[in-house]
Length: 160
Image (cartoon, rainbow, N blue to C red; front, side, top):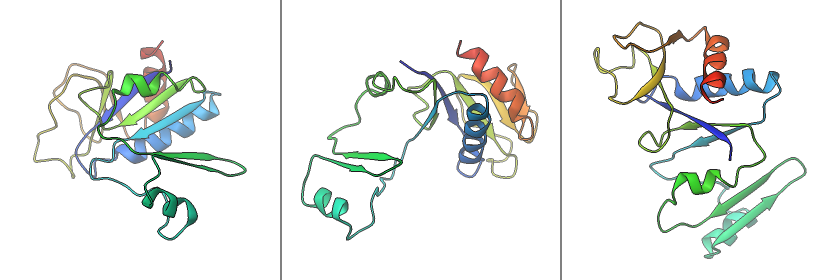
């Protein structure tokens, strides 16, 4: 099973950008990286009207779209399965960076932006580190947004 690190924070705190930048850093280091995003409000994988969209809309339990450089599986669920179960199948990557699922994934990295935060508050949680534009009163490693190379070092060491 791959090693996992979760990223939590308020909307517009920079989680997606941080994860995208960390993916680039880790890929340059030769790691195989996957990203998982919790879409709590639902999502659409395909363009309405396309064949695979039409298959899913017709009721297919699973639609697999295969192209020359990628494969996408769109599968129906009645409930989200335990994440560990899903990640056990991810044997082709070294690390999985997860946005959301804060109650289920540890370690958690807090991404906090003072401008986007709720006054001086940050989401409660058991965090292993912080990536932020301001220092927070937490006794854990803290990294600025321009220190993602160092943050990547920390995350990789944490997951060993």
